[in-house]
Image 1 (cartoon, rainbow, N blue to C red):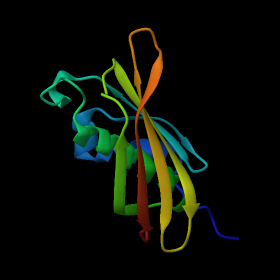
Image 2 (image 1 turned 60 degrees about the vertical axis):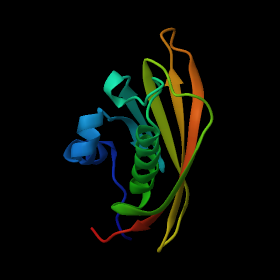
Image 3 (image 1 turned 30 degrees about the horizontal axis):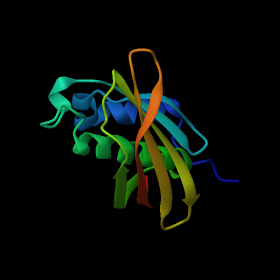
Image 4 (image 1 turned 90 degrees about the vertical axis):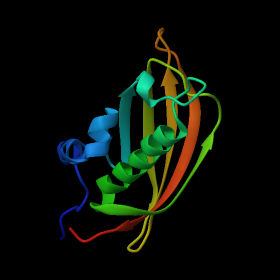
Length: 140
């Protein structure tokens, strides 16, 4: 019997902390395990675009990271080979929650999807974007 190569919450928190971009953006791993992950990021004015919404680059980073971390809970180290996203409405809120799910984990490719929610001052959430990532498992 072989050990599960997937990352647990503690390892993902450490991995997140070792990524300079994730630290700069303020990504926090809230939950992880069994092919799923939840990330949180607090609103920051310096991450917006010209109209005052969260920049699409930050939206993409949250979605892609959620997909990669969800896949990592199943197969360990991964790297993205393809990413796509759909922005559904302007991303404005006091914080953002990205929920990633592993759709299928094969030996050569892992498919994951994520949803990004904006949370307002009252704690209500609305879906602002979705994304999908195809990942390649890496040897540890």
